[in-house]
Image (cartoon, rainbow, N blue to C red; front, side, top):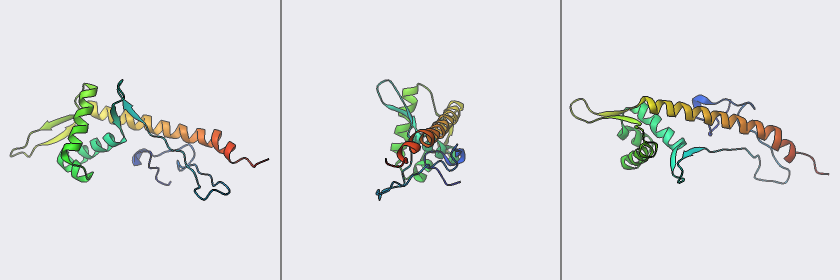
Length: 150
């Protein structure tokens, strides 16, 4: 199956096979076309709480065990990554990381149980939306836009 950039790699499944429904339109040099969807959680004032960017940040922190190493992996500044995580924590009123201050043991950060639930919940809703949008594209859109002209 071809990689679908809309779904975290380990969660890639699609009702349509590869998750990339395409059609080449006659006379359109830009085809084929694909359906894409982007989701995120936001608060009542429209501020982002959680989306693919924060998902990637938390996954990197989980892999690396520290904010600094995660920021380096993602080619972000520590301050930018830290700011987004703390903004999410503030907006949700929940802690995402358990932080250990440096010293002889080295410090580091771990995801809280709540953060792990948030990651899994976001991955699942993202996967389900991608599968459903692929299905709708296949059944509702493609038949209409590939119908021969009268």
